[in-house]
Length: 585
Image 1 (cartoon, one colour):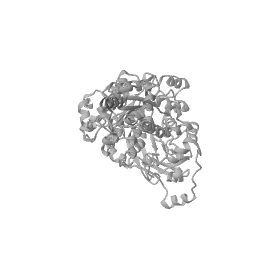
Image 2 (image 1 turned 90 degrees about the horizontal axis):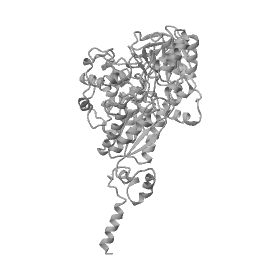
Image 3 (image 1 turned 135 degrees about the vertical axis):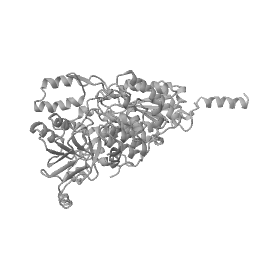
Image 4 (image 1 turned 90 degrees about the vertical axis):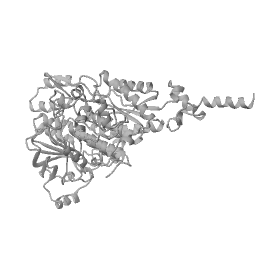
């Protein structure tokens, strides 16, 4: 054999280990070259071949589980995304992560795991994509904390990523009207007052949740899904299709295809996440009266992205952005009703044409938001014959739904969502509860009266730990007919389904010495939403004197995951993040 022939044969052998993958794709570290034959052997055991090794590796993060209807169908959604990646020439790799059912854990000690799950999801997706050298991601979310957790992971990794929502549950039917889980929670309060029989509550329970999907109103999941469009993480129109509809699976397949395109174009979250895109997300949130939880999650996402966003920015955007959608929990209509008339793009078009959005903000598709809206061409609200959407010129309220309250009880802010209350001012003696359980017993057994002011403390990010949502308490108050004349505030959180004079995220929290931890029964508290005030009738000197006698409570958990994440949480005023690079005090 000639030396030339030997060299050619050696070259041919080298080619067997070279799959023409661009060197800047991270997955080349485990698919290219003779030294990575062991890695490829592992992939071949799972059915991957040479064609896959030459393709971008796209991870599909799937939190499917049988513990919540929000996620029970996500294996099918992930499968559609898998085929989308594969058909577009990518190498799809599906992996799992956890979820917690907020609705099922609500009102129990288990609710403390909810916000922790946001961090665990972000941590796990970051770890898998880093450890397996993935090039891009499709991150899927069903239940509430899945959505911000998945978007936070994409921000941290800065891999080309598309967010994919699992979709909303269809409404149930009770007494000739559409209902959601919110109605069931409020039914518990109505039974306590005798306004609903146990038989009727039983019928409501059996019919409120007819199948798979996230809770149907503009609660946390649908709020964050809507925001994924407004901020640019998901293509326009992707939030609306119901969980079990054909459109949902078509959306999933398109998301897989788009993820491959994003990798090929090297289009990363850092390319389109800017201060302007976060302001767009806030404008959308306040226009549709989205969940107060979105304040926490947007602050966390901004912290992860290194974008300067402050809790007071929500006031600034809300002051200039009217509320134009009347959806549950304040109204009667659901996410599916919005989808049937054009979905989230209808709201975005209305805001954009009124110069209330930054149209030049980028998106995952490579278009600006304005270009994407022009391509989708959703209908104008003025051309729709519906009663739950209002034009910017004739809004439900001139100011958006989210209000940040400050004062000597909340120096770093507290969050309130306006859902249509006529009365937004209460002043009176406070009744203080050290946790959710005694407050719930009081509301259920004693009953609230007009003018009551209730404080639930030591439920913050570190004090709880985990900032429990307290839909049980607020729904019991609403079910007793006191949405406008009883105020409740906490350093914990409220569900997206909460309505009434409920103020959450009080910061600093009681556990770290915030003023809310210094309150005593009978102190006169003022809740004044119009003037953005949450205060107590005590002087700075009186508060300082009480602080000298204050002692930090013992932690509720001294080992395990709640202790670990509880110690790591930052303030709610900064998104309650645990990432050291993003956390501020």
